[in-house]
Length: 127
Image (cartoon, rainbow, N blue to C red):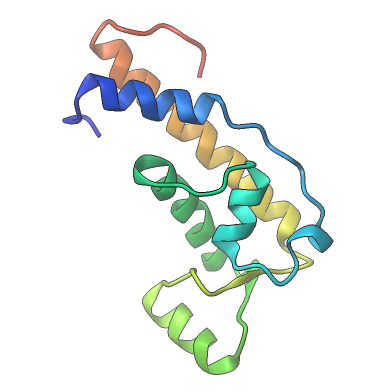
């Protein structure tokens, strides 16, 4: 992101700042693929570019911590082998931790963009 145009950085930062966490219960995301569940948690219909990477990072961390479940054993083996969290689902035991991971990833992404923008002397805000 360091080489991206300033306008793109500001848009990505604003998108992160505008996120409103929904604190969804597990029964509200049960059966949803993890990316859909995370989008629901931030109340957005879709994500692209930097926000998508932030969500993907949160989903992959949840996968590595075994907080997600696989829809079938065959897909589960594939998902774990190649790091594909797309088809994985939130688990009842791991959903609250997954939401915490998402919040941390969003916070860290805001701080990262804030640091880049501050180095360009364009923005001074708390992360």
